Structures are given as C-alpha cells and as structure tokens.
Length: 121
Image (cartoon, rainbow, N blue to C red):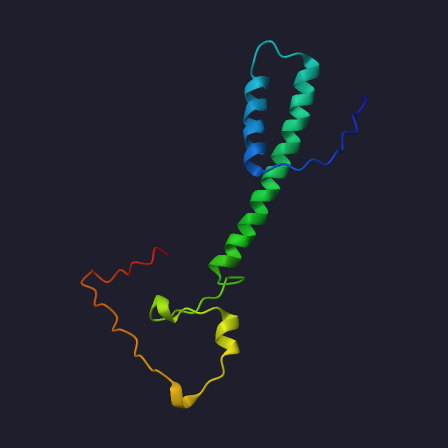
C-alpha cells in the first residue's frame, strides 16, 4: 500500500479549521463521494482534528494558569478617573511633600444584597 507523504505546513485559525472539518464530515457522508475524495478528505480531516485538539489542549493549560492567578495583567485601582495617569507621567513627576493634595477615597457603597458581590467569578 502506497502512503502519501503530504506533510505540508498550513496556518489556519481555529474557527476556519473547525468549519472546514465540519464541511469535510458532511461531504464524506454524501453518497456521491469517490474513493479518492474520501481518502483525501479523511486525511485532511484527521490532520485538522489533530491540530484543533492540540490547540484546545494548549488553551486549556493557559486557562488553568489563569485560574491559578498566573500570567495575569496587573492593575492598580484608583479612586476616580481623574487619578489615572500613565506610568511615565506618574514616575516623571518628583514628589514634593509641600504640594501634596491629599484627597481621601470616597466611601465604598454599602450593599444590600444577600452577600454576593457583583464580580462574576
């Protein structure tokens, strides 16, 4: 049995690959598929399946890291939009203790809910 050596590398998005795989499965289920088309469709479909599963496995690992709090963006919470400055602006201005305008943060609103916060996770 001769084996085809189709080892071309092709870049494809997950969504495009998934849609193509669904189209291949639908086509292979048709009655008028030639043997050649069936084998080539099956070969391409298995290649897509392998790549899609690998992609999902990699993303699953990334999601687990995110859930563990790893590799997250960092944020600094400020009292109001007026307090937001870029890092370069904030670092470029030297502190002068005589001209500090201290503004206390507004009091946090009290919640009348049943103990759930509004953060969805």
